[in-house]
Structures are given as C-alpha cells and as structure tokens.
Image (tube, rainbow, N blue to C red; front, side, top):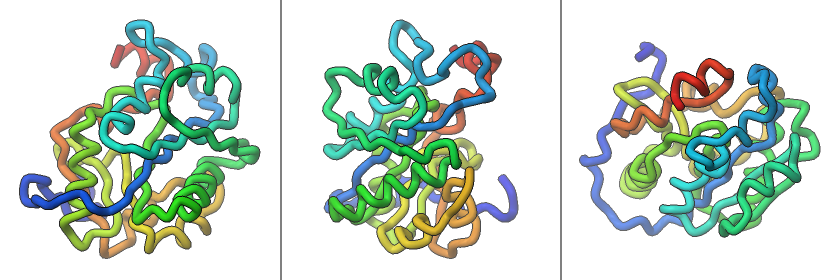
Length: 211
C-alpha cells in the first residue's frame, strides 16, 4: 500500500443498522479500447456477460441500482434483460469516465441519496459481502469516502457521501474519484478480503487470466 493511501479499516469494528439511503451507479458507458476482441462488457463468463455479472453483487444488497450506458448502448442494455435496474444514457461518454460520474451524481441528487456507491461494469468478480462491508462502515463511521480494498490494495467499488457530490460533478476528463480519495481527510479503505475488488478486465490477457 502506498504511503499516500487513506487508512485501512476493518468492517468487523463497525456494527449498526443500515439506515442511510445509498444507491448504486454502475459505470458501463466506456469504449474499453484496450480490449481488442470486441466489447469486453459483453464477453461471457460461464455463459453470463461480464457486465451482467458485475451488477449482481449490488442487486443482492441494494434496492436502487442505476446503470450508465453509452458505447454500444443497445447491446449493453440487452445484457441486463430481466433485472430490476434503471438506465441512464451518457451521450458524452467519449469524453471520459468523468462524464459518467456526472450522470451518476445527477441521479443521486434527484433521488435524494445520502451516498452513492460507484461500481464498474468490467469488474465481474466482486462479492456481495464486499458491498455490504462498505455500507456498514459508511453507516457507522464518520468517513465520507470509502474504497474497497484487498490486502491493503485499493480497488472498487467506491462510496461517496453526499457531501462530495459537488466535487464529483467538477471532475473532468477520463478521471474517476481517485484524487478525492487520495486527498480527502475523510477517506478510508475498507478491507474486504475479496480479490474481486481489484480484478477489473481491461485487456484480453486479463480476461484469460481471471476466467
């Protein structure tokens, strides 16, 4: 773990009811140009598209799940057939991940969420318990930014309290909330003991390695 990283917390330390209203925004709008064999989100693992697997841990824990689509939107939407989710179309997806974050924050504001949990459409191995641990620490602590971690290494998903909505809306380019995580005194890493939180699929070799 880098010295610049936030402190690591263990969820077992926290025990409280999950009273805050937190929703999920799954980012699935990008072009994935490093993946050279078609749309990585639509490649299948045991017959299930990557992006459909990626949303499952959030659906298992949260009632309100929104998916941001953009590139190849009709095909990506079709991968979620039958699931209880809402779609938002990011028309500016070619301008970087920040544009999808902006879409997510608009949803979070409109729905009055106390926090937003951002997941990634190319991370199909996250355990639902990891999502639960982020929610648990958010509800029981004063931390306002939480990122899932595995053995101290930062990964995803990430949870941002509503106090950071303005800052997230101001991010530009192909950047996520990394700078906020690194610079905020209210940030922490939540140890999940789940290697899935650091396994994203960017290349064909990664897909073959993990699958």
